[in-house]
Amino acid sequence: MAEQVIYLNGEYVSKEDAKISVFDHGFLYGDGIFEGIRIYGGNIFKCKEHLDRLYDSAKSIMLDIPLAYDEMEQALIETIRKNALRDGYIRLVVSRGPGNLGLDPKRCPKAWVIIIVEQLAIYPEEAYRDGLVSVSVSQRRNIPDALNPKIKSLNYLNNILVKIQANLAGVGEAIMLNSQGYVAEGSSDNIFIIKRGVVYTPPCYVGALEGITRATIIELCEKLGYSLKEEPFTLHDVYVADEVFFTGTAAEVIAVREVDGRTIGGGKAGPITTHLLGEFRKTVEVDGVKVYE
Ligand code: PMP
Image 1 (tube, helix red, strand yellow):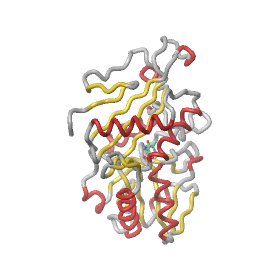
Image 2: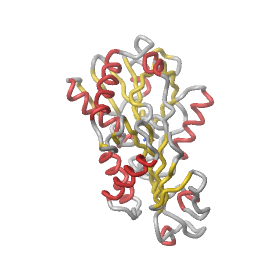
Image 3: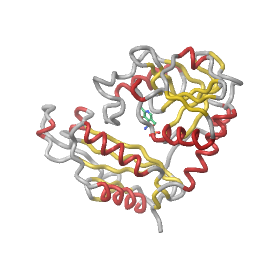
Image 4: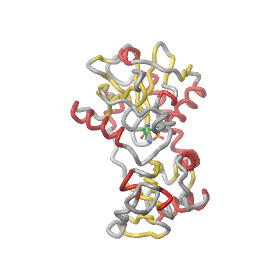
């Protein structure tokens, strides 16, 4: 990768010069939104879906993004080109911008837009075959009528508390329940289970982000003829599932081989998970907005 160039409010600056104000409300209060996007072979995967989610999150929290949709797409393309990256990860952040120390967003005249592109540290290939060990944690998902998990906000403390519990248990990803005890999602991944050939994932109202990888897997299930049900389920259903996997932009489709000491299925990535991962990887090769002509 060439020397890292970062988009900061319309300018392209070096990593050293990419600085934000200590009065930025994203920094002070987690007041802002973000996206994590993958670049595969010089294409921005599901660019429209990510930008749609970004602009929806912005509308929900009444944040005016100072760039029109097309300008934002162009800024992504230009930042990737300047970094000469063909495969990697994009972090797009829109914060409420600098204001005063009070939390009133009216005091923040202009949102800040930051685009960082980087190479991605991903799970080793064996993990996709062997599956991850996971645990459920006591930390519950934010309830949707307090802070809706559909908003991809900068306020990730709920998820970070899950990650801390995952770290304490020595696992890479953990399972978070909602306040009623239904399975919601991981700290930064959606969850699926498979039982007797049927694929299940919690509906987002249970308390999950509308993951773009999740939506891609739902589409693939339809295309490949797997029965897919969005319905709430409990940890018991996870323990007795034939297969379990997480989905996310960084993790893609990663099998889980053990949950809370219970071996899942055959104790490695199951056949449907492996099939879906293979088809997902074919999709990412051809789908997406082209960065280079
Ligand atoms: N849930 C949460 C809480 C996340 O942060 C992410 C990562 N963006 C996901 C699920 C997976 O979503 P996506 O497939 O869009 O990356």
